[in-house]
Amino acid sequence: MKTKHFISAALALCMTLSLCVGARAAGSSAKQEALQALGIFTAGDSLSSPVSRAQFAQMLTAASPYKDGAEGYGSSLFKDLKGSHWASGYVRTAIEQGWMSGYMDGTFRPDQTATLEEGCAALLRVLGYDPSALKGAYPAAQLSKASSLGLLDGVSAKQGGGLTRQDCVELFYNLLTAQTSAGAVYGATLGYTITNGQVDYSALVAADTKGPFVAEGGALSLPFTPGTVYYNGAESSLNAVQKYDVYYYNANMSTVWVCHDRVTGTLTGLSPSKTAPTAATVAGVSYQLGTSEAAYQLSSQGSFQEGDMVTLLLGMNGEVVQAIDAQENESVYYGSVVSSAKAASTSSTTSSATASAQAATQVACTDGVVRTFYHSGTALDAGRLVTVSTTQSGTALRGLSTKRLEGAVSKDGTTFAGYTFAAGAQILDTDSGGGCARIYPSRLAGVKLSGDDVRYYTLNASGEIDRMVLHEVTGDTQTYVYVSGIEDNSTEMNISVNYTYIQDGQVQHINGGAKYAIKGGGAMLAYEKGALKGIRQLASVDLDSLSPLSAMGGGREYPLAENVQVLLRDGGGCYLTSLSQVNGEDYKLTGWYDDLGCSAGGRVRIIVASAK
Image (cartoon, rainbow, N blue to C red; front, side, top):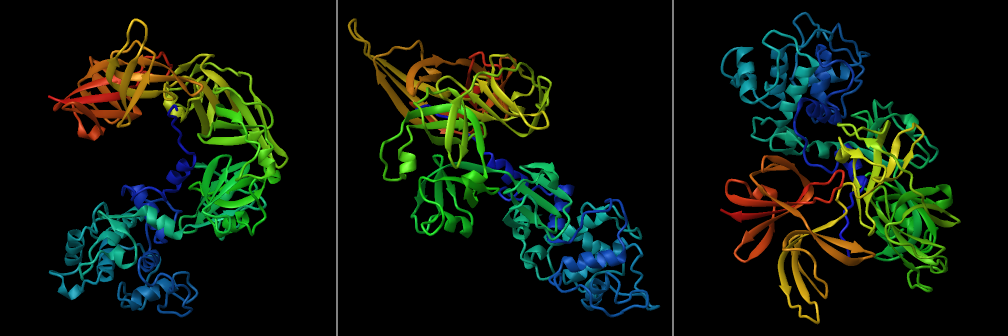
């Protein structure tokens, strides 16, 4: 069966929230976001604005084990800082812990700008360094020790100068990664993850992010007014929220993430059991149950049974947060038929509602997910363009007429034929054999598309392209292999040719009575209705050098396919390796690229490396 490549839309959400990625690079903005996630730093004023002594005391307390008990002591420590002052609790904590001190005249001067030496002295005390043990006099001793510990890395303030918010971003981030007097990493003593001298941003966000919640009435219940709202991965506003959207929030970051990701279809399976399921199969796709509520709703004790039409509300990682009646949500899908067959008249895993359906059709939807729909009517040919509507009353699947569009995609991949691509636009490349590949607008940047290239498109309420189905534009729908052997046993009366090929490192064989015009090397397998129709030779080029995105050969640059197969020829065989393991200096490199005439094709699909 033909290999197809799909990318789940849920991944984009994971990247947006940064919960499923590793520690972020510690650039200035990443440091600020990490400190905001910890509650040490708040969004608001310009980074160039000065930081007062009261504000510095607040940051110190937030970066300490006392952060949860410092607000509102209600007593006066200094004549210029009454108990009603917003920072009285923070200042009391800073004084009691010996991090800061007042002035001889009995004042604290909360509105006075904190100086570099004051800040360094305070942070050194937080780290447990005794001022009397430092070499030299104040403030040179403090500044010297702070510098040796890395506290001053990235700080622009000089001795005697006031601290800005940008300086404090650097100081407090460095504090978390600095060593205490006992030799421990300070951030680790507070329970934070420090990896390679950086604060693990993903872990911070995950620890303080609340959710998932469901917007039952189209509005969010939040304990704060959000500064930033992301809707399906794009920056938006609360006005975009719809009923039954799933959301998460981080109060420290003043950020909300909203997911409008749901699937409607027939519930056909629960695993490992109906009594205590951890996964549910809807429209032929298995989804993990992410909440106890979802597990109960879909269990034998809940309100849904196998064979029911159900809508699953999905969270940021594609997990099921809640299940609702399909009648509460009408879903419409667009895509291309992968396979279609008569549904069984009886089934041990489905109810009579499913078993009575006349056909089961797999559709590659524009969001990159292959779903199985049970519907009335006959089986459909692979590659047919269809739309599917699902409601509680059933599933309606119908063919679509071509809706063409032509023009050039802008060089930045944001517009096409006078239309803007919507945030999260769903684009599916298809072929006549049922092969499909989810792609993104950036993949089409600078490409001119003819009317035959675009099969269908839809516009959202803002007049932007939100879905588009293409026909063999990228070449990504095809199956690419390396033919390593051809054994021709044909006679005058009989054609018998055996082909050996390598696909993704696996050796496979084609034995049959067909002879194809191929000499070995890179090739494309062509399918029709699931059956091999032919083998087509790819074009080859000797490569001089490689980069992660392209290769140079014969004075020309060739883009690499994202899933380029790299084979190392060793002795009599070829073995799968990676781009990072080969180079033009030590290896003879041969690239095989598709020359199918696709508008956005011409990519190197296979690289074979032989030691020089």
